[in-house]
Image (cartoon, rainbow, N blue to C red; front, side, top):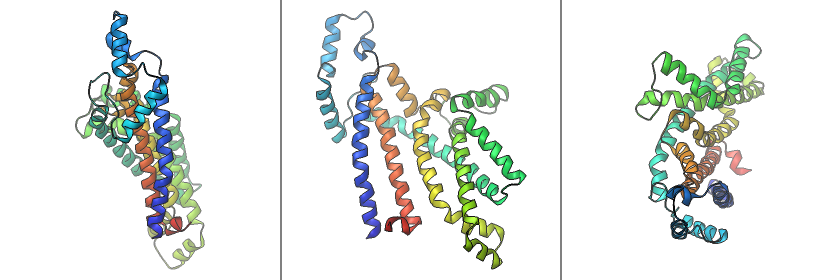
Length: 308
């Protein structure tokens, strides 16, 4: 019962956040400069044609009326019709979302595969050369942004060495460069978090007791210290996955990855309000859902969380 009550509370807390997200998405989309009607018909369009299309799309209505229509549509699962594709927004974003989700999941796996062993090793070798080397690498990862790392990787591994494809979505090889670009900086953040959490656990009394019982160092590190350091690590992983979904805008543009991020950039260029709103809304809702799932994992891993 305590777990179900905890889950219900978290879902209730998410409802105001979702409403605020929907409202901000609508307002931000209408703050984008430019006229979508003029963009669709071209510079030489007649004034009558512009007014007729603007009326057909409902863009001549007061902003509050447009907001009411948009909210009603969202509640019924209708995000409108894309100006550019002439298709329902939900259909367009649904066709691009799997590519973004695939990229974010692989990037998170790469991030965890690098950060968790490196962080545990740095904590185990605290103050030694290994710890300093990991610190330098994490600083390097934090210092290079995605828009700089991506072109560098393309230049080295695609242009010079010819090992990996430059852009597009195909097989596993197409995932390597964009996923590593997306996950590198987050791996540096997670490495530091893992190191700090494990160091705190290694100084606890139960670790000394475990060593006194004759347990191997690997058992002490992973079965005891790392397991009890999972809560802050899960926090970072959950937040990072949401960050990965939002961060795909830059990475997908660099590698021409056909996901939600690149679609949002195209929607901005075309002044496609409904499509832009749909892209941002989907990313934001995904972020909220990931945070909810992270809270549920907390409750499953540590019963103290739901009791509090």
